[in-house]
Amino acid sequence: MKIYRIISFAALMLSVASVNANVMVNFIEGAPKDRFVITNTGECSLQTVRVDIDLTNTMGGLIFDTTASGAGVEVYQPFEVTKGDIQLKDKASVSDGDKLLSVMISGIQLYASVSFTIDVDDTLRKSERGIIIVSGAEIENGLVTVTQGSVGGSGTFGRNSKAVVNMPSCS
Image (cartoon, rainbow, N blue to C red; front, side, top):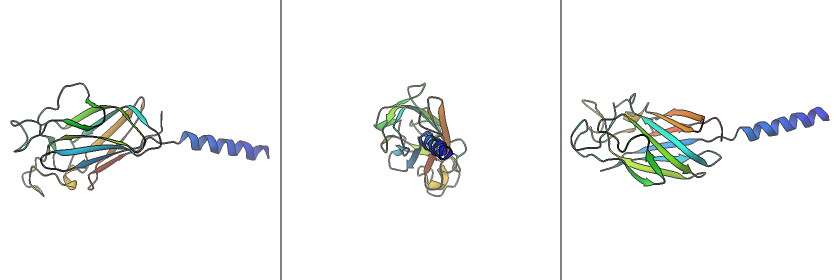
């Protein structure tokens, strides 16, 4: 009987310790602005979260198009927060042609989301939907890294334009 209680207690402690802080990042192609929606799909609220979106290894050679001159084509859009308390990390703006964007989010409640808009273009000579429209296949392999304190995880965008980041635990 005593061993059963110890095993039951250990199982309870493991189930409490395995509460995850997962995040989903969804890229939504739009005209004239593309949108990134960051959703807390985990089991706890998140505080002071850093999200890095790295387009370096995307299938479409994607870049952020933020000014009329530079690497992007036609329509451009600077970084703009549409929902939540989001700030660019370490700089005032995203430069035209950048492939990495880092933001700090003050918090995301359980099952809530925050979002921002920006223009994303591909750099392919011949692309599925043209240079100014990004398909799910073109954002594939883009890397998303989410960090809260010393806990973090990474995920990649799939053809569905979503990246799921499974973090080890809530902190």
